Image: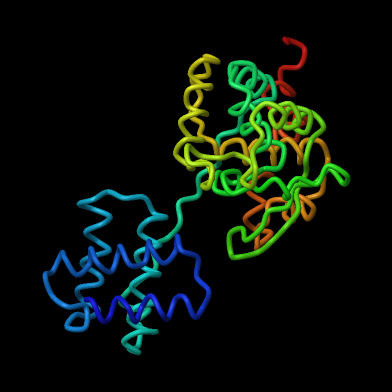
Amino acid sequence: MGKLRDQMIMEMELRNHSPKTIKAYIRHVKNFTRLFNKSPAEMGTDEIRKYLHHLKKEKKVSWSNINIAYCGLKFFYTKVLHRRWDVEHIPRPRGEKRLPNILAQSELQRIFDATTNLKNCAMLMVTYSGGLRVSETSHLKITDIDSQRMLIRIAGAKGNKDRYTLLSKVALNKLRHYYKIYRPTDWLFEGKNKNNPISDGTIQKVFRKAKKKAGIKKPATVHTLRHSFATHLMEAGVDIFTIQRLLGHAYLKTTSTYIHVERKRLQDIINPLDRMMEDKI
């Protein structure tokens, strides 16, 4: 699909889609083409339905990945081939409503204590301090740290939006110590090649190693630091609109997920069984 591929990339670039989105959409259209061994221009609704079903039943991929496939194919057929998208016969996958895992502050402390490498500890602290996505941490520049206002500037975040989030005093002190030893020049956390930022995969690996060393069995990834940041703020009484801005969520509905995992609200509820048998507790 050489010419069609180039056209699709151009259409996405004109709409300012992120490189990550472009790569994901192209991958799915390519896999779609391979599955049927035909040009996508020769296929339509039936093949699209079969491909999405194939992802669900044969590949057993996550709902979010199927949703990306759906969006990628819809973009290709409507914006590149200029065809009508049959919404009735190509249903959008329903989302899976799963609550995020949250690390307690004591568990986070164990993870930071277990991260003895100065650079690695600084990375994890900054990620939690600002509720950052892993890609946001890896692409921080030295100039993004505003120590005067105690803020972190996130440039070109998800949706190509800039925002500011919090910088803790503890994280700043760790960063200052890190800077004196490592002397980064542009990227805050450099990769093996100092001209490039550290990779997302390396940060994930650092977290997994620290989590294991801390003896924490709970399922968690670097992204759990972001979930924990938001939940801990909510438990501390910070309003949901402020948390939405700090996280860079486009919709309040996304931020409201953390209401369901806020421990303090649940702890304040008296269990009906305890109320009923109060004299026996």
